[in-house]
Image (cartoon, rainbow, N blue to C red):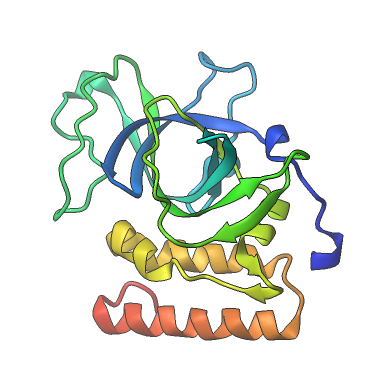
Length: 219
């Protein structure tokens, strides 16, 4: 898809896929995915898949923000199988035990990538890929991020930016390379400028090399 044909999408029109139920760190959150009991139109598997960009629309001190993130892991939870097994954390992170879960559900690990302000028409402006300074709250809604919003978040002064990659890989652990590559492939679908494609080529090459050197996860 050409960048010139990406539709301008309001964040107010996006699909809610779940709510925040837990945090493992300032930028690492657990989201409970909506199912048929929660919504007439729950998210389909491809709408809350591994590597799916998401955002939280939140007013802070009188300004509307979109806190941007990505799904880096998922977990099926069946409370009948006991309370000690399900976890989203890596071995060196705190164990997540969802003792509140009473029915089978799907959880997603979401790490934050940055933030942007939301204009009156619902478009995002002034994107920043720094760590968001604010703490999100339990029950905050998490929305699927469409192509128009993804493109706007990654384009700063007409330059393609992915400044969050090291943070993303640290949080996602052994899945860090794969989720980064999934984001790169997503961006390739609607970035057609040669210099932007070259940036993605360089980032992809570095991610694959680092992963092969460190863990042999991606060949």
